[in-house]
Image (cartoon, rainbow, N blue to C red; front, side, top):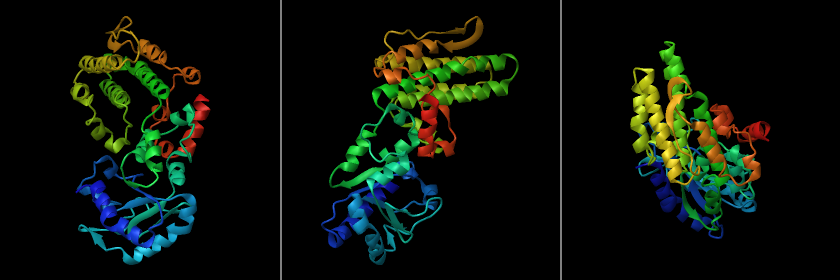
Amino acid sequence: MQGIELSRRFYADVVRPWMTSVAPELPHSAALIGFGSELLGLDDEVSRDHNWGPRVHLFLHTDRFNDYARRLVVEFTKVAPASYLGEPIGWRSRPHPPANGPEAAGAIEHGLEFHTLEATLERLLAVRSTDNLAPLQWLGFAEQRLLAFTGGAVFHDDDKRLTRTRTALAYFPDDVWLYKIACQWRRIAEEQAFVGRAGQVGDDLGSRVVASRLVRDIMRMGFLLERRYAPYAKWFGSAFGKLPLAETLSPLLQRVLLAEGWQQRGEALASAYLALARRQLADGIGGKVEPVIGPYFERPFTTINAGDLVEATLKGIRDPLVKDLPVVGALDQVSDLTPVLEDPSGSQRMITALLG
């Protein structure tokens, strides 16, 4: 059994009946969000060595959290079973400790935690509400942290606040999305010719490194065109493999990575670029721009007219503030450094300084 289903049953069989008996007057939402391979349905036997097991987050309004949460954590400790469906319910504390803070309460003895929605948003995204989010705020959200909030599952939602908030963050607004697509083409434009140039001077290792970077850029474009958030590096390839576009792109990307010569490498990359461009145009993004595969000016490196795709994509943006941004990119497009992506407040400051 995977972790989401285990936790769903734990809530239904143990936590909810207990809550009904000790606090029947208390509205709440129940979910499993935040972290863990099980939020993506990618947990396996190895996942069980840390923070895997029957665990549930209960969300309360702030005033009710202050009145109920810490008392209920202690009371549940006294009555909780030692295990559920063969799995111990005690906290497996590597790398995350049980929740504990001004609006978070948990205990090492079990996997039941209490939170407020506002504090969870602040912890994950450095906002306390999804009302009137500005484009720069969206551009400063790491996709892996948006996925941490919108992944997983909701088991119960009395007032639907949690569901509404997850819906509001389900994917980028259209103008932000188009900007990210344009910036992704810009990334490809910057390096696509280097696969051939490095190979041409006998630097096969350098050619392979650039090609590998472009493979990742293609994969990230695949996530964008499918309107899916990309997870962090450990599950990036696994999640990509589940995208509809992967059926077309994966064989091409395998050819890139296995190619012995820079010419074959460049041709396979160009085929992948063309598949992305055709999918984009089929979705009505980019107007009537014609994707063209050919040499890089007078040099014999197979490339796509990525600059034309950048400009055509930008034309679809309606918000003048987004349209006027430098074609640099969102947080994930300018940094893959984990301490940056996992620092939501720092991420917002960085994007504001870079684009604002």
